[in-house]
Image 1 (cartoon, rainbow, N blue to C red):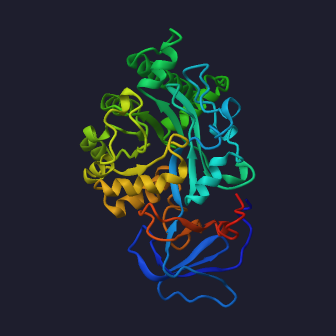
Image 2: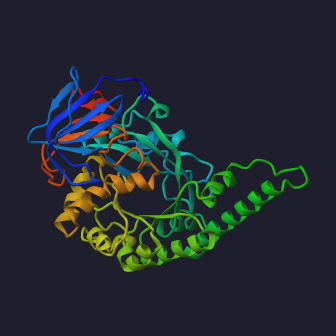
Image 3: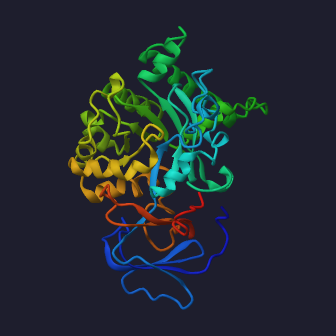
Length: 398
């Protein structure tokens, strides 16, 4: 996708415009030019020659954002050949990049666009205590380079069951929760030592370049968040303890039992990206999974996002998860923020995405009805003003 190409003006008119960052506008207009939103409102003048899209009776919404997926690195229907999620040859692999393994031909990208999920964050897996660098990308394009929005957008780490199982089966460190925490702390201390040597210069002889400590250095410098996979409350407490020790920006991924520590998470301003929500309790850590948990977290003041962990939950069901969370008590406005503006902020992209505001990217969808109604579907979608779905319903471009 050529994100910089100039495009003629586009006006989406007559729909119920839900900006997310403000109140809905009935019979609204979204005016787009050169890939960006120019105006949003009821009395927006549409310039002559603009392409008009009639959205009467429909809902106009920012493109959904899923901040935790494995799109393109855990390809569907490819088996072993498409499995590039975990580099499980070493417990500490911060130098590996999801960017280098994303295949835009993964079938999941077409599903994402059809489901209104126009921005995704692709994470490495949770087999390692430190798993690697994530990448935030557009959901359509020929190469990952033209899809790229930000990389790295975070650094993946895992506590709990997964690394304990992977390395415990091999009878090597870490085979316990205490071993996993020790591996993480050791790597972060080595990173600090490396950065200190760089700062000192060591009498004109700096240390040999090390991609591991460079990547972790971005976390310690506050440039990217630490994306902490954890489900159980005790693992979430460990995540908070480690963040206090090393001073990095923490994001809780999954957070199945985060409700048990909701007050502490809210007080510290730690976001929780909860999910997947449409799964069985397939392992011990999921025994307290509940569709009511998002509402409980939001009510406690926790900054909340909802994720699919695709392909664990198919990505086009992101809005269905949000709808079911509303059924179980989550405020509808909070549910929409949880799949738009909050994940955009976690990814450092809220200046571009997540709401319909002048100056932001024209990455948006027209829905047949309320996106929090599971019966609603996307009828048209644009990424930075380029239509990527709905122009030819029988032959979508991706």
